[in-house]
Length: 176
Image 1 (cartoon, rainbow, N blue to C red):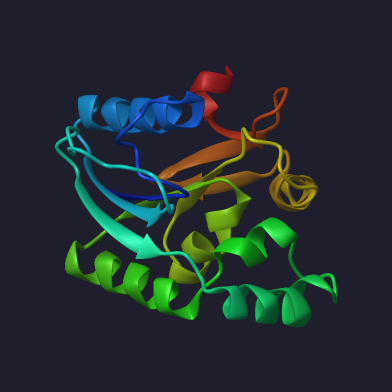
Image 2 (cartoon, helix red, strand yellow):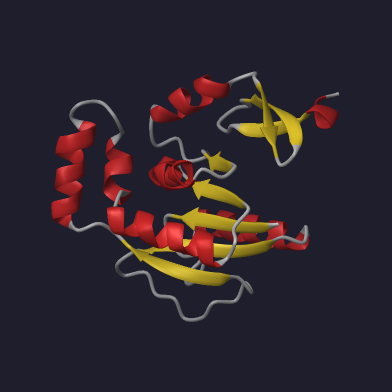
């Protein structure tokens, strides 16, 4: 399967907790035989010396201060999205991600934190939101929309469950 992993930062450079988690996801997906493309937001001051994961990485620009301000006024203040989502939303990045999906014939998306969820949701392919950072109450909204429902995921029925701090998909076979 061809997976696009949309991340809030590059999984390279000085290792910190979140980067280690990103790298672990990529390595596990590759070990399972999946091809992984990373779309990572380039964080100012984050030095990438070498890309060592055998995954193509495309760098996205963070929105400008003007875009962030517009996002806050148009979306956050009226309660549509959280402040965290406003910090990363950019129409240009959405276009770049759509282009990556098309160029690589992506089958599945993995979104890193609520900040990137709207990009995965917009594409219209199956996707998973990794919600281990607890940045926003919007996680509860995402989880409650599908909690304990059987949904088709990768050709199998999965039930969405919420263990402590994380929402995961559980196949019917695993649930037994």
